[in-house]
Structures are given as structure tokens and as C-alpha cells.
Image (cartoon, rainbow, N blue to C red; front, side, top):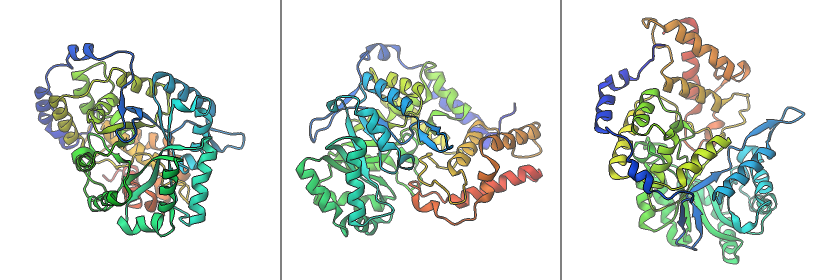
Length: 447
């Protein structure tokens, strides 16, 4: 099947040049020297915790339908995944009261409480997006103890701060007295480490990190991957190299979210994937992203939302006898990132914060389908293509199979309710309308 390129994928010669610059596979000696059978750990300098470099993000637990057709967590599978993770040495589990429409903490608590409490670290959050009153915020905090079946939290985060700068932070955590309350909880030992997760612009990060002098943050959670290292858009988010440098200056441990950019770095365009496979045919695409993140010493743990056992096993393989990247490999990943930046995908990580849509639109599903088709190069671009009709039919057929008609992009009325919850600050209605216009053009064959 004819593939559609982005500028003929850098006119092919660009890709060839990168391939030529990266001739050769990963050094077999380097592989052989890696320790086998031992999970990679990092020591938290603040309290001496020995934390697995692979952390479990509990935002993507597998779901099934109950007898009423409602989506519920598949607890049996979650228990199995947690058991395997702990057996392999994974000991950091990150959740939130709002993940999986409020089901993640309970599912995580059930699975983890079957193990000795000293075998794992719990990280959860004050996700008071809707009700920031003192009463509502404290109720959320106390309910997390019950859901997680614990009497202390190892790592507690102010959830998704940054957007709106200090004024928004002040309303959620200072004006209601919650930060003073959490500081008291830290002093009492019910919170062992207090930090925040960040989403926002450079100026907003500077405001948040400036509060370290006042609140003495114990750690910070940021989005970091080889794309966002130098190629964040700079408008809605900030390059991770800047975030890392500022946190490193303050010797603050870093927890990484989105090391795979919502899974997108685990399923690359074929042209890009071929370059990575050419260097190490045995390594998964995801392993390159995790090795990149883990190479930086200030990283305490990198979170992965491992829905399936195969993902967990692949990540265990990467972090057991972990091999950090050398300077040449880091330079290679920067070239890969530059190539990826040429692809016109939507910067959706599939976090589902935008859901549920009041009009039933499957926002993450629509973006995931669109990104997949763009990355595969199977979007019909012009009737001049030899296989245009085949590509068009495939796109429309897979779209209808992936997204039920009543949940497709054409139902978006632009209410913008979803935008207020998106950590990536995506203009969701704009992107949905753009995709819908493309679909209508394909239907009408007017491209």
C-alpha cells in the first residue's frame, strides 16, 4: 500500500542521513555488562527511600463492563498486574481520586493492600478541581486514606498546578487553608513527602518553583520524554530540559509522567521505527523512550500506565539491568525527535481528563485514531495518489469501527467544557472540527 509522507518524510534523504549518522547497533558489550535480574532503583536524597526507576501509573487500569453495561475496573487483572510488578521489584504506585472516573484509588488500594505495606510506596493527589472548599478538599484527602487502605501517604501531590499561574494556585490551595493543613499533615507524618504535578507554561513553572523557598517541596512531577525535552510547543507547555535543569539546581527529586507521550512514542511512524529497529532489532520502541528518561540522574521514577501484562513485562525488561544512554545515543534521539516534530498529530496523551463529554463524544478515541492514521501514513491526501480511494475507504471504515457514530467528532458543538480539564491545553473543539472537516472531505472526495 502506498504510504503518505510528511514532506516525503523529510524527502527521505533526511532520514537516510540520520540513519547514516547512526550506523551500527547498540554495543553488545554494553548490554552484556548490564546487571541481570535486578530492578534499577534510585535513592531519594530527602528521606532515603529506595524507589524503583519504573513506577506504575494507575490511571490506565483495564476496564470491563458490569451487568448493567457500566465501565468498571477489572479488579482481577489489576491484582495480577500489581502482583507481577511487585514481584519484579516495582514499588512506586501513582494514582488520584479522579482517575478512571473515581475508580482508580479503590482498585489500587485493593490490589496493594494484599502485600506488606513496606513493599510499596503510595503516591496520590489532592485533585480538587471541582470543589476547592476546605470541607470538600479535606473530604477528598481523608477519603483517599480509606480507598487506599493506609494510614499514611509516601508521596502526596497538589494535582496539575501551573495553568493560571499563582492566582489559580492560591484559590485551590492557599485561600482555603489546604496548604497549611497539608503542611501540618506532613509534620505529623501522615504525608511523608509533599510535592506537585505540573502542567503549564514556563512563566507558570517559574512561579510555582519560586514557592519552594516558602513550602520546601520534597519532589516535583513533570512531563518528560524525548519529544518534550526540546520540542514542546512553548505555548501550552515547556521544554522538559528547562524543567529538569531548574529542579536539578534545587536538588529536587523528579517523578516523570508521560515518558511515552500517552503511548505515542511506543507506536511510531514506520520510517522512524525503522531507524530505531536498525540500531537494535531486539529493543521495543517504548524501551528507547524509557531509557532516555532514566538516563538522567535526578529522575526518581518514571511512571508507566501499563494496562496489559505485555507492556509490564517489556518495561520490566528495560529497567532490569538498566542501560543508560551515552552521548551519541542521546544525540540520535534528538534527531528522532526532530523528525517526529514534522508529523501533524494532536498532542493528546489519552489521560481522559476531558471525559465524559456532555454530548457523548469519544474525544481521546477520535484523537488516537487520527494520530495512528497520520503516523502510519495512511491518510488519503489527494485524488492524484494512485491508491487514494483505497486509503480513503480504509480511513473511513476504521474510523467508524473505532468510534461509534453517535460519539464522532461531528457532534461537537464547541462548548469548550473539555478544554478546562486538558493538561496539554489542547484546543479540543478546534481539533475535533478540523478532523471532522477532513472526514467530510474524504466522504465527498473534495480533498
